[in-house]
Image (cartoon, rainbow, N blue to C red):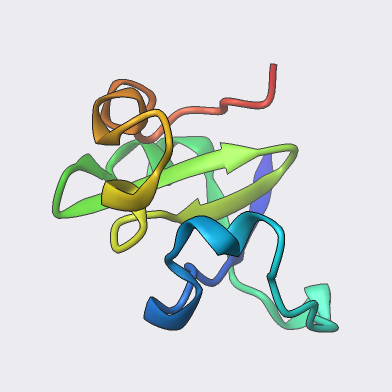
Length: 84
């Protein structure tokens, strides 16, 4: 199936406060690009890291070093659905 792509966190949002201080933005999901799981799986490196969470694709390339669990956990799950 297809999944929608959501933009990555901006550099201003890439802080520990980002978890509690995100700016909520309305998004017209019909205008977002769609990708197959196979396409997302191609983005599985430190330089290009996407994950799927509940049907949405997130580019976490720029945010990975700020992840509280470390970038290793994101790299292990890069290009995959991490919803469960």
